[in-house]
Length: 217
Image (cartoon, rainbow, N blue to C red; front, side, top):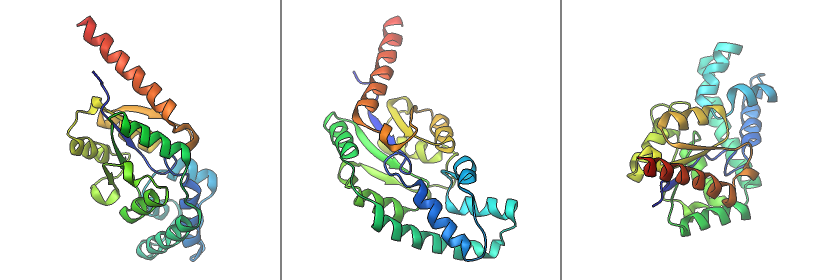
């Protein structure tokens, strides 16, 4: 009997190599008003956070006027959409991984801190939508990652227990959210690590541990 019944993916840095896209789009929007985020700073501090959270932090740390948040966020989303249309393409390894997992009987979902429109477009452009049971965005929760709400909501929607789900994440905020939800975790460094073999290897480890506990009991 399978211990793991579903795999829930983060999107940016897991299914889509979009970290630089968000960085470029946000800096382009901030640049309209003479502000910028250094790449190292974005990687270590801002990666994985929703744009509105990033802007709030910039107001605290760099005195970005709060009244600019709405316009900068709107322009950032506009620039992000342009980049998605330019750069987002299907990846065979990801299409293969999700199609095989689906054939193996796993439920599949995406839970992202990005806006709903961004999530939907990226999944469509990457040709991954047909394999997904559903997608959740930062507009589907009150508290974004690192709060575990989005993963808890995904698990509830799947009708499963946390320990029946594997979350694939790449950044500290997402990893914290996954652990907080009670689900199992596959931490990856980059999109190339997200493949069928690595996911099945992690599932096998979890299933073996569950069988060992069961036999011991």
